[in-house]
Image 1 (cartoon, rainbow, N blue to C red):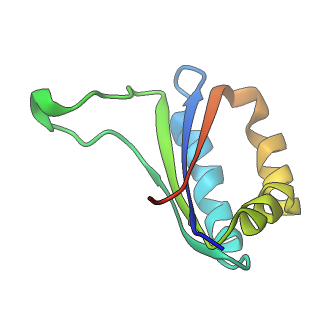
Image 2 (cartoon, rainbow, N blue to C red):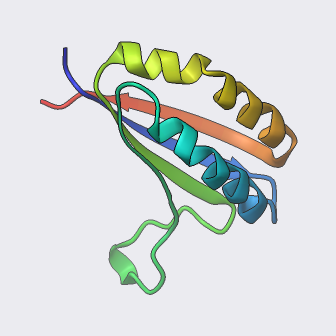
Length: 104
C-alpha cells in the first residue's frame, strides 16, 4: 500500500474562518489518534511572502494531510468525529475542494 497525501482547500463564509479553525483544531487530537493518520494540520497564507505567493485569502485555509493508505483515509472520512465536525461547520462553510494525491 502507498501513502496518500490530501490537500483540502476550505473556504468559509466571510468572517467565519477563525470559528471554523477553532472547531477544526478541537478535532485534531481525535484525527491524529486514528489508525493510519501520519499528519493532519490546517495552514493559512504566510504573511509577507512576497510576489512568489498565490494567496488563498482571508476566508480560506488549507488542510495538509498524510495517510498510510486509501483505506485509512476512507475510515477517516466516515469517522463519527468527522461527521460531527461537518455538521458543526456546515453553515459556516462556502466551499470545500479535496485533492487526493499519491507519491511518484
